[in-house]
Length: 197
Figure 1 (cartoon, rainbow, N blue to C red):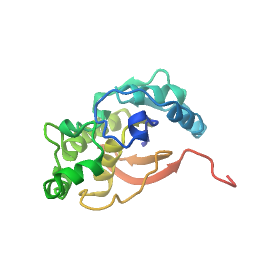
Figure 2: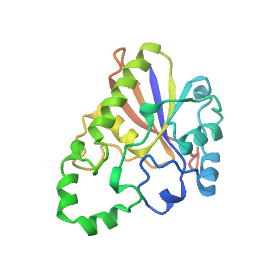
Figure 3: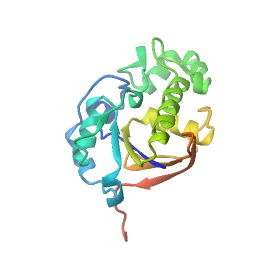
């Protein structure tokens, strides 16, 4: 079965490069306009749609025509704890070597009071196993950190270097799941028509 994972549209904090984590912010007007430009292959219209419970993901699903998207807690963004609201560049300037050492832990990076990427990947793996049992294609509206967790599961990425697949916000992440919910083939799926297409 196939999964198409989309990142929500931009919020004011995305545009300001602030870490949102689980802070529940609405879409920015520019984010709404960008989503309206996305084009899904008609075959995805019959897929079951699940969404992170955060407003920015739920609104993205509605704008894409999935008003009946089911909220799924395992699709919520990583909890960034005490780093919520900060810009990563500012944290690096303030914390220096301490943050660098934490980031070097890859999957075991953990913001104070927050969640590790390994924990995000664990809850996503649980969801993948459940969805494989249903056996239908699913469209998942989620967050950057959760899509990174999908790359961890599909590619064995340890998060100590650049992602194995660079994903712009207007590019979907298409995964194939086997019968046990293991992620196999993974590829990008552009959502905005390109010149000549």
